[in-house]
Length: 349
Ligand code: TXA
Ligand code: MG
Image (cartoon, rainbow, N blue to C red; front, top):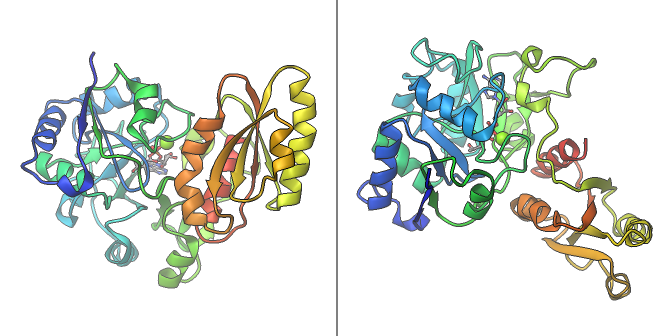
């Protein structure tokens, strides 16, 4: 299949824009469209159409046990996929939607079981990106949309990333430039007491606790478990993984420089390079001129939103042929730094 690419700027979002109309029609006819959201690009299909949903799993090579997030453009649409919106969910939705927060709700029987991988809950979010919103409301369909990468790979923050993984496997992509937040939404199980944070993301734990009081953070099973048995199965797998081995250093300049020296000595003997996710101003000229490194200017250390925005494109950038090791300092548990940590630790597994 030929994948059609439509360029559209966020400011051009309108139900009358030809690209929005064409993509809405593709979705209404069981097709697949990659869409920009404020977090990462998603691979969208009509959530109410089992045939369309099956195509998402096939294109991504995603295992059937990993459930999908359903995207809506207004509150009314939730009733087409969920039975009910409990009070805690309503509070959070009013505060953080549209935005990077996904809430588990009781699943409606109208929704194909494949969307939720047979679970009784459905993950729902209302994205903030104007193109995503215009598309959902024009198609007038709730859209199932996982991140638009092949299963296990780094999530895409640009149309180029999506096409590298999925060109020829999907009907179309709406290219609205790089995404803003750069990593995926926070996933929260609000049906538990206290609520359980399954995946840290764009809305921080601190922001959730300001509304809810105590939130528990999921830390993974004590024993290795089958994905089906976990509160959030997608979290089990090695994820966001570059081809090169990823080594994480503690969040200081000294530790990173030390690790670069060590690894360059070992890798250059084999004619290979060391990729470095380098905070601004951390790498001195001596380290650079010694050679053997592929550097990505990651951003200001301490500016976690900026580092989050650049994280996945940086990992893809340094993961070049000839690079056998990637070094990256690990941010602290602080704001969206927690989400960066989480993705790096999964990628380094
Ligand atoms: O920001 C995002 O959330 C992006 C954009 C496209 O919206 N989407 C995204 O979807 O990251 P995906 O499929 O790559 O990640 C969804 C995660 C998976 O780990 C999945 O296991 C979990 O959410 N999940 C989905 N439905 C669930 C459910 N009913 N119960 C528990 N976990 C669920
Ligand atoms: Mg994903």
